[in-house]
Length: 461
Ligand code: PMP
Image 1: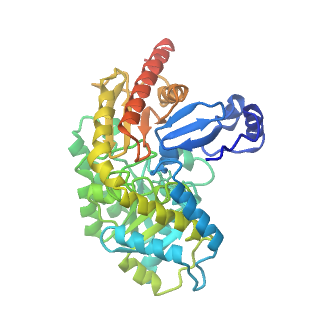
Image 2 (image 1 turned 90 degrees about the horizontal axis):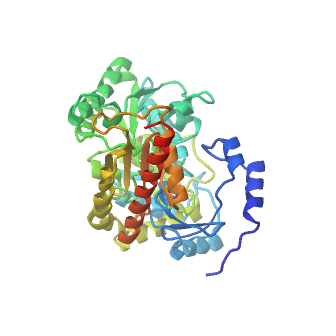
Image 3 (image 1 turned 90 degrees about the vertical axis):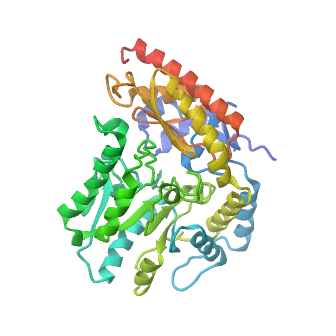
């Protein structure tokens, strides 16, 4: 394969980056002082930076490169589609084969009667679609008062004004006028941090019942939908107690509330099934998809909706859509990605082979003195850092300090692992090998040791 050389030396790129490039979720001045790590190439589960370091990508980019990097079939699918039809829209009664075929394939893969797809360019856009779609659905059904959407604190549903409001990230709400009206949040099922003296099962039920209480407070006749990730991702890979989802399902059915499962991370194999809803026994009315749909090779997202919602929405004109809804090149790449996931048995391998292997190794990290619990489903997992496992205690000082230290040590040890507060997260490409899992665990352990030593020397432990 042809080598693409760096256009400029690292220091020049870093200077230009600091001068002109505004990064998402980044403290600009802090980055400017340090200089960004410049990633130049990637293959399989490995990134290469501009200094020639090889870094194991324990996060699959941003939870999206499910097939791993460097799949020529996806490049070829994009090239073919680019030459044939690089763009056409799906507005005003036109369509094209890639969008049609992708919608049909997603309808085959999605559970229950989720048979219709509205495309978007990203997960945020798709959740904005969902917000308008559920309210429009109820208006068309003659129940226009049903506007309220219930979500959870510490949920992540995107960064646009609508999807950011749906999310429950307080740091995001503090900036730029969110949440917008008629969005309400209940507490998350994070037993480790918030479970107190309750058993996980008791706590799961208690948190699910908050949904019922919120519906009653708002009046069921005013509630349109509940939105949730099957497993919270960006909130810290929070695996809810087993009692949680069955009770949520009972409540949404009893009150006739639509359920939106945000599958942006959980979808396309990450939990060992096509969708996290299948792994967790959830029957949603709408699923949000993005990321793993194209393994991140091109931006594409969407909403897979039930036949009932599609029928009601289809009886009117839905005044909504994006220039890139069903973009033909992104759709062609997504189709090819789904073909490979299927034909190479990658999701079965997650469920039966590499997922269980990763789980065993990842859970062994709880033998480390600073690791309190490990939560993992399929290929997404997190560990909780603590100075006192028995009390599930938090560290002295600001939350997230030790998490950040550990992430920095991981980076120095050529492993990408993310931190959310004092939880450390992994979400590697689904194609990771057993040897690579061993490398990941060894580097994580070393980084934990180094971070613990640093924390002790700084009096935080
Ligand atoms: N929903 C979930 C569950 C996500 O994790 C994300 C992205 N991390 C989004 C929505 C937003 O997707 P995007 O960044 O593609 O807009």
